[in-house]
Length: 317
Image: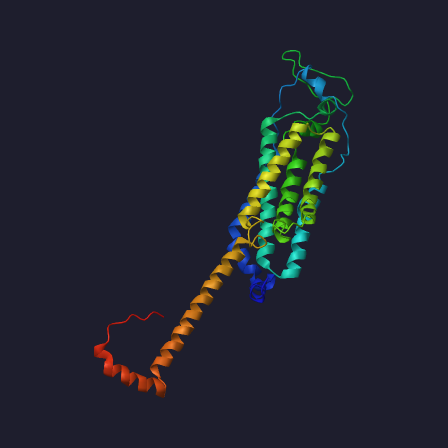
């Protein structure tokens, strides 16, 4: 990065933070709305799918509590960890535009994924692989004599969560947060600069590997079917990609490390500098023409004397 670009990047939280927050106030308000919607989706009762004794055969996997990756750990590695990386980069470059857009993009990635995931969970109502022991903790199955549907006798909270298998929330949120981080790192370390540094790929793949291990743990704990995990992972990956590209260009671009806002600012500043150079050059030229040197005065008299005998000329500046 040139010294000129470095000076342009020096926009700190103190100098431009409030202005940037006001500019994106609507985006932050929408985030609050998304958080409220997701909270409501976790309160309402999901669809209770019909489960007969025959279907219950595939839902008798053991109920593992606590699970390998508890719910409280998801925001730690999917939100807080990426934000720490953003802060480290901000401390190095002092670019509040990069910090703001990275945090905003990450928040949208996680919350949009959460709303979509929880909406599908409530609408589908697919039972988890361990639904049997959620429904019948004593192991004695009870079914409705009229329609053959299951009649659960277990804890109501466990039963409610038992109808939320598809898609996997852990998988979706892991790929939403860590997937966004992988995109961010690929742009900052210029992994696609065509210089053949394969080690950079390993750095970018680490977040995806961690997200994949979390997704696999959901199958190992018998909390999800493999189709739940696959769908949730793809959902998080797609949403994180869309949210990242909303604020940053593709990492293989020349300015793939910067935000769209920074690139636009650079273009505007470059255009203004070009205009200033043109105006300065024109002013100097006009100033020199207004006060000709003695040599120019003598030459001017000679040109005036022969002007009527010369053809017209177009002078381009």
